[in-house]
Image (cartoon, rainbow, N blue to C red):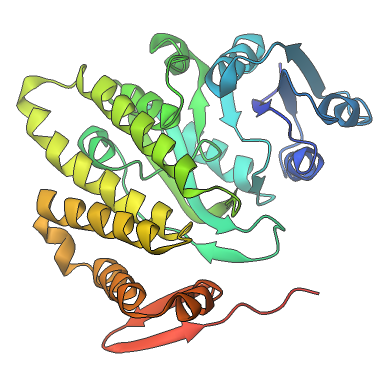
Length: 328
C-alpha cells in the first residue's frame, strides 16, 4: 500500500498536466500512487498521459462529469489511507507531501493538513504571495466565513474522513472545495504546515461575464453550506457574504475592460463593506477603493494603461505602482 494517494482531476489540461505531474513525481516521498482522472478531455490530455513512464501512475478515463465527480472517482480508487488533491494546472514544492504527512502522523486527531499557497501566472514564472494564516484545531467557524485553504490543491486528508462526509458534492459548480472542507471541519480537526508549498495557477483569460457566472454559483454554494449550519451560527452568514463579495471585488478587478465593469466592481466593494464595515479597517479595502476611484476618474486611455500594470501596492500612505517585467 502506498503512503499517499495523489488525485489529479484533469479536463482539457494538455498545456499543464505534464508540469503538474512532474511536481508530484519530484516529491521527497516517493512511495505514492498518482491517480489522474481524465474527465472527458477533448484535447491531447489522454495522449500526453500515455507518454508518461511511471508505474505509480494510474489513469482513469470517464465521460465529462466535472471536477467533483472526477475527484470522487479518484478517491474511490485510491489505495492509501491518506489522500492528497492537486488540480491539473497547479504545482507543489518538493517537500509538500513529506511535511504534511509528518504533521498528520504527529497529530492522530487531525484529519486535514493544509499548507500556504502562492499564485502563479499562466506561464508559471511569476509568483504572487497568498495569505499566511495559522488556523488549527476546530476551524469550523473560520471556514464558514472564508475559505482560508484557498484552493483544491493544498490539503492532505485521511481517506476515512472523506468517506465519512461522503466526498465532494457533485451538484456544485463553484466553491465545491470550500463546501467540502466545511463538512470536514464540522467533524474533524485541521492542522497547518506553516510554509508556502502550493502554487495556484491564476488564469488571465476569463471575461467579466464568466466572473458573473462564478458569483451566481458561489451564492448557490453558500446557501447549500448554510443549510447544514447550526441555528446558533446562522448569524455568520452575513460575514460569509461580506467575505465573498470582497473576494469577488478582486475577481472583477482582474477582468475590467470598460466603464461598466468598473461600476460592477464598485457595487461589489460597497456590498462587502455594508455587510461587514470592519473591512474598512483593512489596507486591501482602502487599496480597492483607491484603485476603483482612479478608474472612475481617468480617461479610457489611462485606464487601459493602468490595467497594463500588474499590481498596485498600497503601503501606509504611499502608493507604489509596480510594472510587470517584460517576459522574453
